[in-house]
Structures are given as C-alpha cells and as structure tokens.
Amino acid sequence: MPSLKDLRNRISSVKSTKKITSAMKMVAASRLRRAQDAAEASRPFAERMNRMLGTLAGSVVGLPGAPRLLAGTGQNRVHLIVVVTSNRGLCGGLNSSTARNTRMLIRELQEDGKEVKVLCVGRKGRDQLKRDHNALILDTIEDFGRRGVTYEEAEAVSEKVLDMFEAGEFDVCTVVYNRFRSAISQIVTRQQLIPFPVPKTANENELAAEDGNPGAVYEFEPSEEGILDELLPLNVKTQIFRAMTENYASEQGARMTAMDNASRNAGEMIDDLTLEYNRARQAMITKELIEIISGAEAL
Amino acid sequence: MAETTEFELVSPAKLVMSEPVEMVVVPGVEGDFGALPRHAPMLSTVRPGVVDIHKGGKVETRLFVAGGFAEVTAERCTVLAEEAFPLDGVTAEQAQARLQSARDDLAEAEGDGAKARAAKAVTVAEALVAAVGA
Image: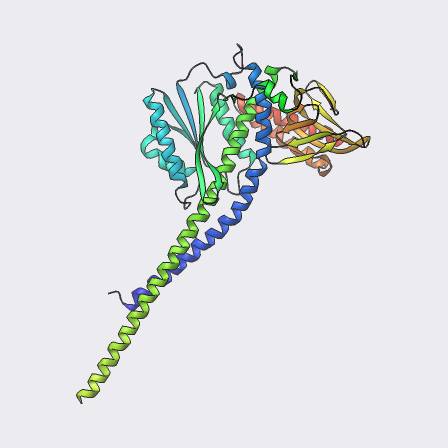
C-alpha cells in the first residue's frame, strides 16, 4: 500500500506529463495545418509535371539514346532506397512502419540477388535501420524540416541522388515515405523514381484527345531529348520534395494523434490515482478516529 | 472582350497564378515566344527571365521565372518554374545581393555537380539583375 506522500508525488508527476503531451498536441495540430496546406500547394506542380512527362515519355521511350533517367541503365542490379522519416520521435508508429516496410523491401531485393544501398532522410529512420542494415546505409541527411520542408532542402537531397546516379552507383531508385491521408491515417508508400515509370495510359493520342483536339502533335523546342534531359532531373526533385512534404504532414498528424492519446491516458491515470489517494486519506482519518474513540472508551 | 487563353504559372511550392489572359510572352530557350489563344501545341524549355502577361492590349503583370518548362495548347498555357515571383516586389539591391552571393558560392563550389549548379544559380541571378534593371 503506497503512502499518501507517494500517491501525491505520482499524481503531480502524471499531471506534468499531461501538460507536456497536451502542449505537444497543440503544437502538432497547428503545424499540421500548415504542413497540409503546403502539401496541397505542391500538388498542382506535380500533376502538371506528370502531364508533360506523359506527353513526352510516350514518344521517346524505347528509342535508342533515350535519357538514362527514363530508360534506366540497362541493368537492374544495384538498388538505392531513399527512406524518408522524421527527425524527431514521439509520433506514434510512423517511423517504425516506414522502417518495417523498408526492411521488407531490402529482404525482397536481397533474395532476388540485388545489391541494396540505403540513403536515410531523417534521423529516426537511420536509428531504426542501423541495427540490421548498418552496412547498407550510405549516408543520412538530418538537416531539414525544422519549420516545414522547403524546396531547397529537397533539392539538396535530390542532387545527392542525381550525382550518385550520374556516377553509376545504382540502377534503380525507390523512395519510401508516409503518404498523408488524414491525421489518423498515414500510408507507407513506395515509389520508383529512377528510371521514371512511364504511366501506361499516357500515350499521346489519349492526352491529345483530352484536350478535345485529337491527333494534335506537339512541337518541341529545342527537341524532345533536350526537354527530357532537363525535365527528368526536375521530376526527381519534385517527387522527392513531394515525398518529404507528405511525410512531414504525416509526422505532424501522427504526433497529434499520439499525443492526444497520451493526454487522454494521463487524464485517466490521474482520475484513478486521485480516487486511490482519497480512499487512502479517508481510511487514515477513520483509523485515527477509531483510535481516539477506543482510547476514550478505555478510560 | 478579346479571346483568352488559360494561363497557369506553377512553382513546386505553390500555384503562383491561374487565370485567363489575352497573351503571355514566355522566354523560351530559343527566343521569347508569345502564346495567344489557339496556339499550336508546343512544349518548350524556359530560360531564366521574365514572363509578361498581356491584358487589354498592354503588359499587366511581369513575373520572374528561374527557368523551367512551358506547355502551350490551343486553350491553355502552363509554365512550370523552379522559382517564380512577381518582379515588382524586387529591388535592384536585392537582385545585386543575390548575384553577389551566387558568385561567392561558385567560387567556393567543389566537384563537377556542385560547380554546374552554382553556375546555374549565377545565370539565374544575372537574369534577375537584367530584368530588374530593364
């Protein structure tokens, strides 16, 4: 039976924990709003980019001399996995599920006899992956996302990826991140970046038909290849930017939910402890009364 | 009201502009081109420079773009730019400062990739200075 003092101490410690978790919840909620707006604002760019790429890629793919970012290196041996996670913890199972998914992907690829390299974006992913796959981790990028993800930060990541691709260090690149669906639901998503997966429906005729102008043929300036050479690296940047903004929004959402739960649990715990404390106090008063009364009666 | 084409200017961070216009002049790599309604479909690379938006027969808005792509069809003109902002919010000093810092970065850059990127940043800043001065 804990003494009254112990109970008082526990109650006050749980109360201060609750204060912290509910403050974190508030912070996450306000960041979530901004992150969500940012994620939504970055969508039009990605959509239009896809439309343009669809128009172009359909006509160039398969031709000899197609850019390597589109056609691949002709091999399928070395895989680079870009794992996007958060830099901070206390956001529920978000980073664990990314790490779990990545481990699965690594195992699948290794069973196929592929060589795997990992680039971690975010400290938490590295922390979880280094136990099993420390040898595969090339580098970790932690310097981002203090106040939301900026395009420059995503650019730094993608330049690293592109430099490695130019140097022939990998053949296929996949990014793993949490897609934001709602504050309580984030979906771990794998997306292939390099070579660019040409959408099956995106052949020129269909796109042109959408414009109500069937058979329209685009003019290209300077040339299809010239445009692709610039458009494809930009697309890699855009996709990485998108992965990072989505993941940031997911992080805030997950943290909000996790902290909401924590605050609620703390509240329940405070209620239980207070009840126990009051009982103990009452029992003590009763005991003292009995002692006094029986003492008086004995006289 | 004259015939209009749907103009959209998009940067990775946001949709900068989306509205019907009479004509836009886009700085393509092979020279500036004007996109009017019923333009033939075209895809072009855009060099760093100024996009002029014409309404009512005169230039209404001038926007700086740091290079990107333009897609023109009969009823719309979409410009994807890595960076885009209205020109009237920029002073000559700001543009000069940016050019200076870009040149400093270029001097410090090491490795082919980093050098190429720094050189590109200088080109963008030079275009901005020219645009502000003009």
